[in-house]
Length: 284
Image 1 (tube, helix red, strand yellow):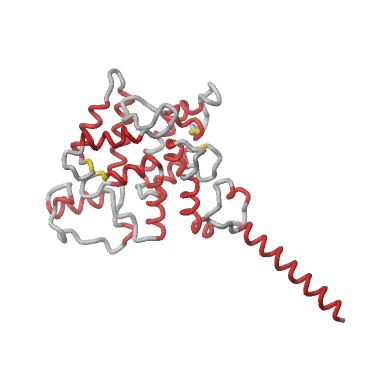
Image 2: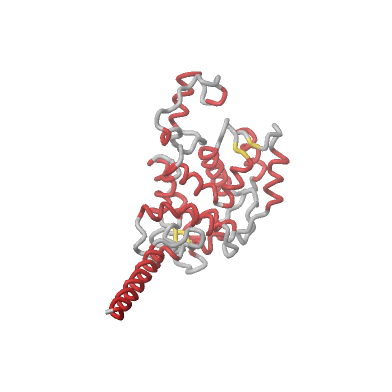
């Protein structure tokens, strides 16, 4: 009788260990998870993925196997297949708070940058206009800041140089006029494509992260290394919403209240706060 009890107890313990292992496999430790782990754990539902996404992004972005430029764009490669499809671009911009129209306009990124990244794999264009993350450095264009090297690595001294030269206020930030001076200074001859790309990139950056009408140094640094996008996503999903940026809501409220498109120039309290924190900033 005692022998049977011991055998049953051992079987119970073994079953418990097996079930525990299955649970750990389905819900891995966020501090050790990698992007490829998601493919190996199909039992992870959307809620579980949401809980570990912050730690996942931190783990990936701290990886030394990725270049700074790859970390900058990997936010849009959620399934870790080395490919950013037009749908990935659209959903990524939507998660950052941009409107449907603006997110659809983001598909121009695939239109212009798919073939340069495709060249590392084939001379034939990708029929689905997909962008390849491993060769994203081939999509570098002229008339840019040069902060990313030709290999996609970050050049911190050039980043600091931007603020040394153009931060006329000494606040560690760049206003609209200073950004225009920066774009103009980087223009090279006979490069209309590069001029256009640079303008669109800085315009999108300003719309996303401006605060008090200025782009702040730390926010811009996080934009370059990719951590900013995950922070915005987390704030919009779990926090009080992303409180920076500029959208149609800001434009119409400031024009209606103070006859200016610059809400930061209005007196504090002259614009009522939105009752819905998630809609505090509505991108164009």
